[in-house]
Image (cartoon, rainbow, N blue to C red):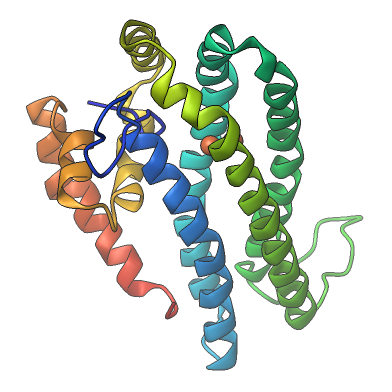
Length: 243
Ligand SMILES: [Fe+2]
Ligand SMILES: [Fe+2]
């Protein structure tokens, strides 16, 4: 089994290391950030953005941020060091990417806070010293602006990785070094931490990529994935405002 951030490619590569998990994660990032913006906009336009709908969107978004956090952490701790061992001149790029991960975290916190405010019950008592809450229109417009900014930054971030680090990871890191990196990543991850989020990662995965990610999963966990995690995700997805 591969963790959600492990490398592989959906279409079988002619040569090089298989970057399926890495590619699926980048595809998910490009898809999910604008999707959140569209779901919020559609819900607001139809008058359906009540606290319950915002809370469900918050649940969906927290699955995404779990995957994204794992991806960024894996890149900084495992993937870039392997790339740098093969191509040391990329060290300044690795530093820039690591700094971008940190600044992107600030935007993630802002988005999470916006969703939390939209999902908060109106009329509840405020804690002593707590500021007057902004009205929902203001919260929503700030949130949508934040999502648009985050989307633009993520696009640039992914493009930089794909133009610099990914070709080395795929073509110049040896198969042995790559396998050792995957083993090290797998050792540091408890499947219980990321398997429940995998239905989001695999929502639009081609069959080969899906099987690559699930194929080596222990039978009992795969059964739970198919009978519990994936149906629960489909139910959540069906309850969200339209995309
Ligand atoms: Fe990254
Ligand atoms: Fe990445």
